[in-house]
Length: 461
View 1 (cartoon, rainbow, N blue to C red):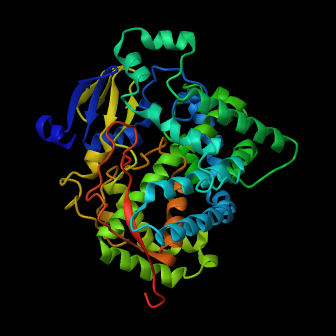
View 2 (tube, rainbow, N blue to C red; view 1 turned 90 degrees about the vertical axis):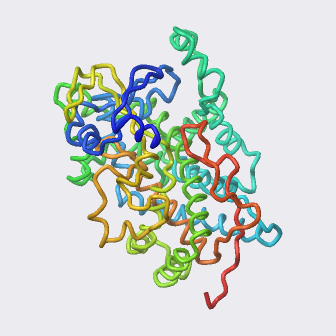
View 3 (cartoon, one colour; view 1 turned 135 degrees about the vertical axis):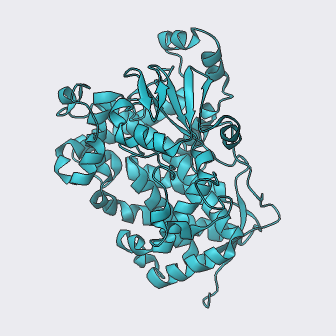
């Protein structure tokens, strides 16, 4: 879309699943995402009413979204994430062990398989309280259905294409209960969550996200003022939120978001780790600098804590620059369902959708200097002030930004530190340089994965 921006300008229209504007103008996006959020609070309404995903945060609208977001935010505060760090560190133990076993027999290791297993292990233990070690149990239904679920996300899914292109077909799907998503996977995960909820209601509690979601309505006081304002900022009082503000989350909403967090986190975390490992392998000077920081702050397993990671500035720079270079998704969206609205002199008619070209923004030389170069220092304390608002969008921005951002960053950082304590990333003859990205999916994952050589660090490194 960067080519189209150069051809048509920073704002242009297109028609696909409805009338839309592509907006590349950062000042307009700042108004849409943040300062005038009350005019654009919702994502584009999905044509398909797939259950349980029609109750996920991304699908909820107006007051219903605000209620769920306000309640679920209590499950992702810093204090709650700290409770989960022992679980994540245990998953890192398995990750390091599997990489160590494979590197002894294979010159090039498919990182996508192992990081995918790690992401799924973290999701299973963090969300559901399950220990699955998916790398050793690749035929476990938990693993099988997570992998299969992403086939339905392709824009070349036949059911999805027919539903989009054939007039009236989406309504017929909804009427007949035909789902675009993997029905068997949905049934499996809803069954797992039902059993987990039942155990917790009987008093078997765990420090995981599912438990925190079940308890979250009792923990509104845990939200900081800043987080509360992020949730509430800009919402009109007539959007229905007042009627919902004191309601406890329904089992449907808990179910929908538990499954959604699992599937969304599985692929995006996996991809982020693959691409960061690749970028470190082809930019050895940055890998060496990060290893020095790891050795300084966290040379041993027990040193890797929530508090330690928060002090590792270069680690933060590396992860943020990697997410700029390879964002999890090519774009985001909002819709105008409130009425004709003028933003920076541009009329956005009621009913129009807004497409935010995240990948194009992240690679625009007018926004980022030398955007095709991997420069973690862009995000250093000294340079942070030079980053323009809403120019870094791997998790979106504003009140509707990704609720799981903190958890995702923690998972990524834990894995990188634990890996770099033991290994170095290097390219091998099978490494794609640069990796091919999957343009057929909602997520920018490499379809061929990322193959790297994993080298044991010497004690003098």
